[in-house]
Image (cartoon, rainbow, N blue to C red; front, side):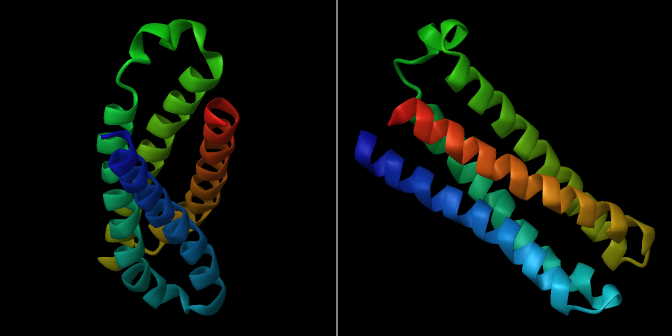
Amino acid sequence: MREPMLILHFIGLAMVLGAAIGLIFQRMGAAEESLAQRSHPLMRMANWGLIVMFISGGALMTGLWGSLGSDMLLLTKLLLFLVLAAFGGIISGKMRKAAAGDAAQMAAAKGLSNLFLLVALVVVVLAVLRFQ
């Protein structure tokens, strides 16, 4: 059962990282007013990727919950995943408001999308270091 969960986890990770990188590249080439509408599907994909990672990661953690307090890499990775999920929700909300006409929300979403990518990359690095 571990292999199918690992495959799902990597698919979720690809969805999140792909959306984060896509947001940055899309920001370079889109007009400000259309960016919120164009970016919404990417954030939806990232949110679904986070859900897939949460479910598959929970299954992959079977047997590791007991050692969570003494495994700092794993604990840090899990906490940063929660930060990543929070950023995903906040960015989605800001993009929804920007698409509804509040242009000030788009500037905040831009800054958070950079942090979103940075945290996602740190989560990947910590996972590789922990599970190598």
